Every structure is written in C-alpha cells, then in structure tokens.
Image (cartoon, rainbow, N blue to C red):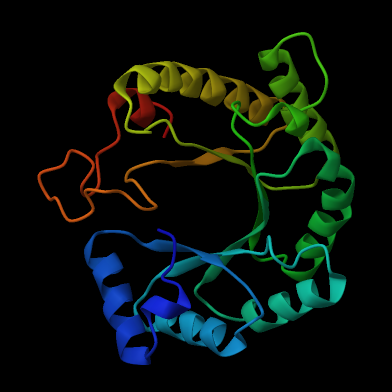
Length: 231
C-alpha cells in the first residue's frame, strides 16, 4: 500500500489511525516515498510502522542521484526494523542505466541486510524510455536485458496497471500484461534472480464518482486467476 502523505496524517494519532486501518485490511507492507523536505514526517512514519507492525519499502526516486541526499536517506532509515527494502528509482528510462549501476552497488554496500531493487517500466512505457529495436516487444525485452546485465539488483520488479475504466481498452491491456509478465519472468530466470511486481487492485487519482459506493470502481478488487498464477 502507498503510505499516507503528510497532509493526511498531521498528528501521530492520525498516523496511527491510518496505519491501523491498513493493517486491519490485511496489508502488511507500505511503499514509502522518502523525501527530505520534511525529515520529521519521515521519522514519524518510521516510528508508526514499527508501532503498528508494518513493513516499509523505501522509495528514493527523489534523492538517489545526489550522493549526499542518498546517504542521508540511508542513514535515517537503515536501522529501522520496519524497513525491509529500497526501491532506488521508479520506472527509469534506458538512458538512466549507466547511473543506476553504481547507485545500486552503493546501496547494496550500505544496506547489505535489505533488499535493493529498481521498479522498472511496463511494456507500455513511452518509446523514448526503451532501446531501439524492430518491434515494441523486442525493444522491451532489450530494456530488461540491458538493465539486468548492468545493474546489480536482487529482484526484478515492475508494475502494470491495466484497469483504466474503459472495458475495451482493459481487454487489450490485460493481454499486454500477461505478455509483460512472461517476458519479465523469463528475463529474471535468465539472470538467476526472483521476479516481483505491483498488481493494481484499486483505482487512484481523482474520479467524479469518488463518493458513489455503488460504482464498480469503488474499493478494492481481488486479483483475477490469470494474475494469481504468477504469484
């Protein structure tokens, strides 16, 4: 679950209430976007996760390219028992691979007891994010291979969000998702690491029917059998 932002949890009591709600839903891990603009909020989030027995994946997309800020985030989070992993960057283009390789090595040296990964793009990434190739699928397979050949991560991770509120588009997206899962699983196997990912179970953003609890987009949906087959 993506962790609550500062505006939603102005006090420790608010933070604990939200974290309890997350835990009561059966969710055990929060994806935390770690930013340095408000260190107090970060420290409060770490403490609340420990109090409520929740694990944290720390996303450092906002700071990873700055060595000093990266070191500060690591120093503030690595000793927290709730922190289990670091996502160095979310959905990088192929042009970032050269910079991600030394960053991943630095993370692995600094936090050898945590899982270090980079959440990659799905196969519908914008063309400039992928290497050149004859077909989109060939370009995406090259993206996975180039990344895994260069960046020392412990797991291949990606996300795919097929549910857009348009049934016709969703049919095509789900087919593409299964193709994406197959290509990623094969790439991970070829490099001897596990494959993980983020599956969409609820909508996000602003919707006109946010208060309409009869809407099929209200709440959280269960994974379909084709998704569960990859778990």
